[in-house]
Length: 276
Image (cartoon, rainbow, N blue to C red):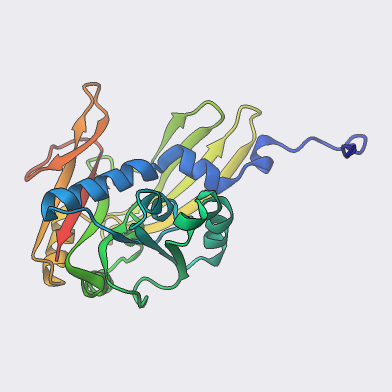
């Protein structure tokens, strides 16, 4: 029988924040790899008349989307590319390990700069969760788009997401309550002249403990016209904005359809699909 370790008298119990795994919290709060992969596959099929087989998930973090992609069939292969060795190791332990041996063999995690990664050409490159906004100037973002263009097959797609609206540049905190924690999106600082945007993610728990600045992002707040112009300059023959529908209560319904104009909402999220 294994004996439980006794706490030293007077030793405080660890708080919920101290016991929390920030990557698990992030995925529970904001990341839905099933919905992402559904959109990538269905959009490709509508545009190209066949199902895509190979995905490259740039800025992949824990590579949850790459793992979900590999679950979709024996011919589905995926690459996850990220600079951070720590989050890739976490993904191997906590996400890749959940796959069957056959599916696991179809996922390759690569520690590399997405500007310089040299991988086989793929059907789809996904740069989601606004990750590419880390490139703050036109020259660098254009270089990234050109590198992706070169890394796509002849009929490949690049899929990005973006957010905006008249609250996108507002310094504010937004709270979303879950059963086990509260997710706090903190738009901490915005500089209108440069477009620089500093955001944090915090988590708060029922025992009043907090995990402050679990994640910090230093971005440029890019607009949709800027992004579409850069994609055209990088060689993509067409890019289309997919706008999220309304759930009737002022929120998004998770359904994204092509849209030419959009609405002047306080906050919106959209996909951009760029065709090689």
